[in-house]
Image (cartoon, rainbow, N blue to C red; front, side, top):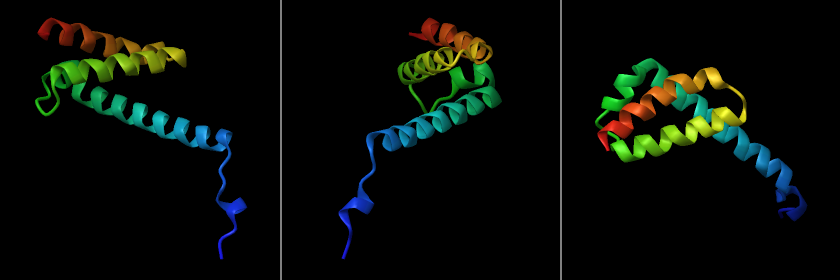
Length: 86
């Protein structure tokens, strides 16, 4: 009925899928923060300060790994503001 070989995804293909999902998530989150602005993100009430801090720090790491330092400036301002609230 089903051929097992057709259902097998090798590790490289799976990693590519995961990488694309992570990239789409990071870029989408950055666009949202960019639209809100640093203060808007920091003052967003639906997410705890601690969680926003963890998310934002991970985003900085992700963008730094890709040498997209221009995106880090807004994120670093947000981190500074969030740390002041902790």
